[in-house]
Length: 407
Image 1: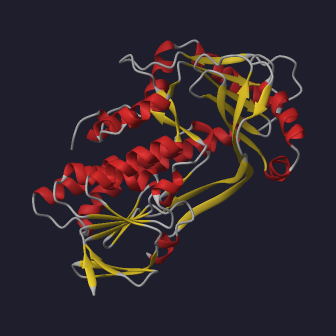
Image 2: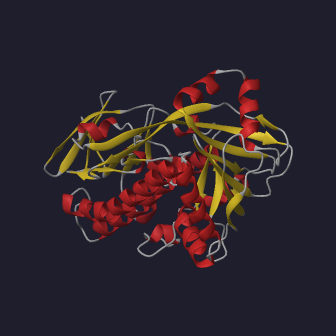
Image 3: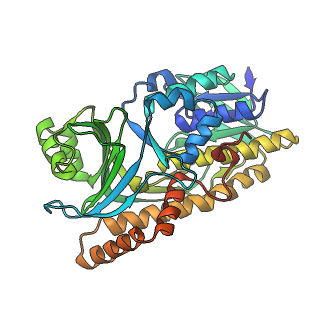
């Protein structure tokens, strides 16, 4: 027996759940199923945190989940950028941002991943989204007016559209025949939570060190921060596998002493850093969103926010198609989504790639050029305001959800 639905989403993380919720809210009566190996309640204990741009916060508000997330969120009130060597006694601040958009809202919040997935999962279920977990999509085939999705447990679902939100190593992307452009940076990102003696006062720090960017991002409570530490892969692996004391010693060297003594406050893990870009975002009755479409360096903190941009664009395209009786899985409809998202994605990927190569370089001429550039930005308020707007995800052509408007 084959079940029927309108949209199947493979992947029940933040992007998959927000897409399901967005569709359910935008088009009453639409049938949406989310398939994932892990139930969202199992992900609610994720100790990591993510930077949510102002535009993404507007979307979460419009979807009705920000009120549940906000008590755990910390607004970024200020950001500083330094550029130095590890052994330098002083790290001069080359660039500062006040953390507020032209409209007076914080340009970003730090949000615990567990709180975010809990709010999205509960809201999606309440909106009538079918959550199929633990389960996975084993295979699929597009044939005329539908895509047949075959689950590992033997169930078959006929749908108008299959959306892959199954991560940067997306298996479904390969099954759809979509090729990627990829390369490895030779770096890994160490992610953990730290405690410190002094209050961060809502300040985010990005230290450009020769091995890569080192970001300290404020969490709720004042004396806890999220750490995103880019390091050469061999050293990162040793640090994660090694003794806590050694890790904390190296951590203190990089953070400095302005926050007092720093200590580990959660598990640590390292993830290989590279660039993965899908050459196409769509195929017949198939679409990519989030890391399945693009994986990039965390230097600009835009990975998850780019996924939310995909969600907002795809919800708007599909909702408009459904309302006028168009087939949401038809390639001409999906091409509207691809045109909206592909250029922006490639532009952001190129930006993060150039920034990482520029700032993970200790050559003296390169250091001089980038420090002069940072100094110029610091002295030009209009340019700084432009960068704040870009980081916040606010600009022309923004999908309605990211502008805080219902679809």
